[in-house]
Length: 165
Image (cartoon, rainbow, N blue to C red; front, side):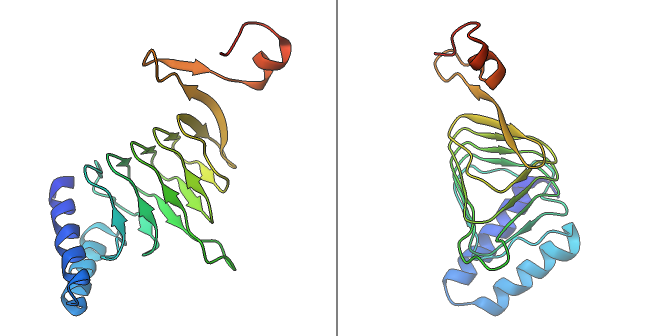
């Protein structure tokens, strides 16, 4: 099953859920869970053009999470809440999330950001940031004007060598 087939199956499930056919939507969710070991609830909000290149294998999403348009989500991702908190992550547009990343709590992931594989994100990620680690930290910013990557490390900034502007 390619990711476009997964997308179609989820879209059908989402449509059924929003048209008050929840038992049939649950069947679709069950099929995704059994075949892919992934939990992609039908009520999940996913923007247009978002892709799951590895079919979301082993991924888990809270039903109330919001994912923007044109994102790329690899396998083994967990996106959900933190114990005792009601608010959930909001993922912006054009975000790339690496395999086995965990995104938890009342946070937002800014547009055009990259979450490195295996990262644990528990704080907001600014737009155009590249984050990695446990806990995830900003390691670079994308330079949206030249299409390249602009290094933005505290060592460079504090040492006075070069300009980051």
